[in-house]
Every structure is written in structure tokens, then in C-alpha cells.
Image 1: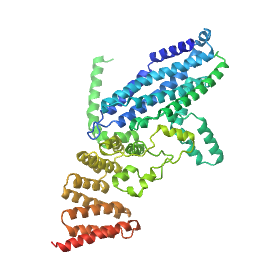
Image 2: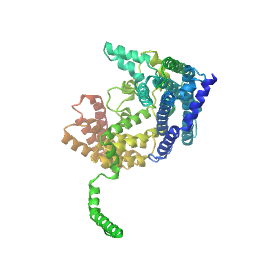
Image 3: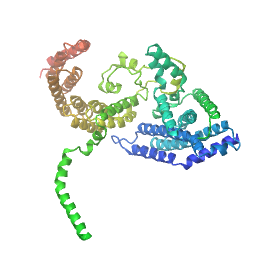
Amino acid sequence: MNAVFAIAGVVIKEIYRRKDFYVLFVLVALITLLMGGASFFHDDNIVRSIREICLLLIWISALVIAITTTARQIPAERENRTIFPLLAKPVTRGQVIAGKFLGCWFATGLALLVFYLFLGVVSAAREHHLPVLNYFQAFWLQWVMLGVVVAMSLLGSIVFAAPSSNSTICLVVVVGILLLGGHLNLVASQQAPPARDFLYTIYFLIPHLEWFDVRDLIIHDRGLVTWPACGLATLYAAAYATFFLFAAWVLFRRKALNT
Amino acid sequence: MPSPSFILALLLTICFTLATWLQPRAANWNQNRARPDDFLAIIFGDARRLFAQHFFVKADVYFHSGYYPSIFDQARNQQTHIAEEAGGRHARGEGGHEDELNFLGPPRDWIEKFGRNFFNTEHTELSGADVREILPWMRIAAELDPQQVDTYTVGAFFLRTQIKKPVEAEQFLRDGLRANKDSYEILFELGSLYDEDYKDVNRARNIWQLAESKLEAQEAASGTMDLQLKRRILVHLAHLEEGQGNLNEAIGYLQRVVDASAANKEYTEQQAGIQKQIDELKQKLAAHPK
């Protein structure tokens, strides 16, 4: 387990040395503050649109950080040939996969925490109150969802040749699931049999990442998700993340490392 | 080879000559080009109308606190609910609005059932000062597509009735009127603002009469009739005249409502009510002849 955490630690250090997060954070802050500075019909108490813009930017930034960071982990190790001394420690390939996953997931979580702190400060400054539990739930569900995305991206980094193609494909798949995943059953029910069965199969196979998007509840002050539902969603995400990690380990175990 | 200072002086002279020659042409050129306020039109082109519609719908989503059908389960209703609300075009008691927003239905499978824990499944509408949350999207929609009349009428309606900002509502309507000079919808809303908020009966009357003349001019030009708004303008004018004690004028306006919608079966029930109002006014007039 120490080896796993050691690898994770290296990944976290690598991420905070890179400029990606800082650039994205400055962009999010700048756009949110600009939006917050705008006055509509001389009303300074408008807050929901600012929350919406800020949350949208947080979601985009978190996805970009999670996917791009994870996608380059194993290809970079292979390209720099640092994977050989790493595996000679001795560290098993399973530990490499687990370490890389934990590192990317924790690093994404840290970035997400900073984003949510900023959102909380902006929102509280405007509204003079902060529903901490609601923000915590939104943060937790998004982080859990990013766990699935990181695991998926790690699997992609073993399947696809280059980090760029992996990042693009993962981003398209994740955004596709977020936008359409929840509606596939409705679309399927309106199709003729072969297409209907195909769509239903996809619907029941894909991880329903859209569950974890509770932005609307935060934006419109609609209260908390029930804690049992939150717990079940966490288990659901853990199951998919485990599946992707296991698949990544199986493929990585058989993969020739010399490029 | 001439000296560098001579070349420099020559280049400076050429620059100055060019500048004086180009200046009047550039000024003329700028007049023909888009002004800075057309910046969005240059950037987005016609796509800005799509974005404007998106933001108008976004205001509607905010009005319902996020409880809103997606494009997949959206009813084929062209008008957004918020516009109906502002226009008073649906009757709550009839349940049409409620039925329309009961779009979720029973869950089709366990995924859908469990997924409903994570979004708003309760239909509520913003009221009072909370309606302010729709305003940014209204303003953005108006900036993107100044020709979308609904944006101004709906925005102004909520500004004056819920948020109690008639001055801002008037400003917004006048912005809309500058972009849509012949819009009887905006004029009608402006008249309502003068009547209900400023209590300026004379200006309200003038504006509603202008709205009616614009509506009739457009009817004559296009051959189609916006009977619903025509009825509303005439009824408002009738009530205004009745309030001012001009019963003959009030009867005249109400009679025109009856005549305008005589051929339309949709208004059969309302016709009886209008006729009853005419009879009452006639009795009042007979009791107190001027």
C-alpha cells in the first residue's frame, strides 16, 4: 500500500507543479467576477446566474484537469522510460495503476476543493449565507463522478496510442453521457426494435454520470439530496471506477512497455 | 545613395500625406459600417437569434426553479410558460399549465427512478422579488436579438408587477420600442405601465390607442389578426374610459370587442361576459345621463 501512496504522491506533486490548474482557476475567477460585477436593471441581489456560470466553469475545468492529467500519466512514463526503474523497485503493475488513479483522483479533488471554496466565498458575499451541506454534497458527488472519469481515462491511456486521442475520446464520451445519458431510454422507446434494443443496451451499460450533476439544486436553492441516495450513488460510482481500473490493470499487465 | 535622414523625412512626408488623404474616406467608411453596438451582430451573425431564444428559455427555466422539460420531453408548445404567465394567456383553473409541466410521468426504469433524487422534481414558480433572478437572461436575450418582442414585454411585466421597478420596466420597453417601432405588443405593455403603475390615464389611453392603430395597420398589411391582443387592448381601453366616467366610449370599445370576435367560436363564453358588461354600462348610462 505504501508503494501505491508513494506513486500517488508523485502524481499530486507533478500536478501542482504544472500550470493547468492555475490557468483554469484564474479564468474561472475572472469570468465569475466579471459576471458578478455586471448590474442588471440596477439590482445587486441577483445571484443564481452567477452561481450557474461559476458552476459550469468549475465542471468544465474539473473535467479538463481530470482527463488531461490522467491521460498523460502512463504514456509519459513509457515515453521517458521511467516506467522501467519504477517497476524495478519492485512495484507491481497493479500498484502503478492504483497509484496513478489515486494520485489523479486526489489531485482533482484538491483542485475541486479550491474551486468550491471560491464559489462559496462569491456566493456568500452576495447572499450573506452559505448552505455548507448543499455545497459539500455537490462537491462530493462531483468528486465521486470524477473518480469514474479518471478510471475511464486511465483505461483509455492504455488502449489508445496517444494522450491527445485518449483525452478527446474521453471528453466526448463523458460530455455525451452527461448530456444524453439520462434521456437514452426515452429516445429508445420511440425507436423500432433493432435500434431500440441497441439504445437500451447502451443505456443500461453506461455509467450514469448525469446523476452526480446537482448544479440545478445548488443554483435554485432546492435543498439536499437524501443521504441514502448520496451513499448509493457513491457505491454506484465506486463499482464503475473499480470496473475500469480492473480492465486497465488486465490490459496493462499484458502490454509490452518498450515503445 | 541619399542620406538616411532624407529617406526618413521622405517616409514621414508620405505617411502624413496618406493620413490626410485617408482620414475623410475612413470617416465615411466608418459610417457605412456597423456601429459598436452591432458588435454582437458581427460576432454571431444570425446565430445570435438562436442564442437569444436559448437565454429566453433559460429565464423560463429559472422562473420554474429548474423544473423544466428537456428537449426530449418538451411539449410541442411554441410559447414559453413565462410568456404565458406575463400575458395572462392561460387560466390556472383549467389546469393546462399544470398538465403541461407534469412532463415527468412515472419512471420507466430503476435508473430513471433513482436519477430523480438528483434534480428538482417539484413544480414551483418564482414570485415577488425572487423573480429578479430571470432578469440577467432577459437582458442578454434582448441584447442578442433586439427584434424578439416577447423578451421586452415579459421582462417589463415582471419588473413592474413583481419586482416593483416601473422605471426600469419603462426603460426596457423603450429600448424594445426603439428596436421594434411598430410593435403593438410593446405599446400595450407600455400603456399598462402608465395606467397601473404611474396612474397616468391620458398617456395610457394615447399609447393603447396607438397600439390599436399599429395592430390594425399590421392586420391590413399581413391579412392576419392578433385577435387575443386586440381584445385585450380594447377591454383595457373600455375599463379606462369607464373609470374616467366616459361610459359611451367604454360601451363603444366593448361593442368593438364583441364585433371583432363574433366569428370566433373560441371566445363564445367570454362574449356573454362582455355583453353583460355592455348591458350594465347601458343601465348605468340610462340612470345617470350626462
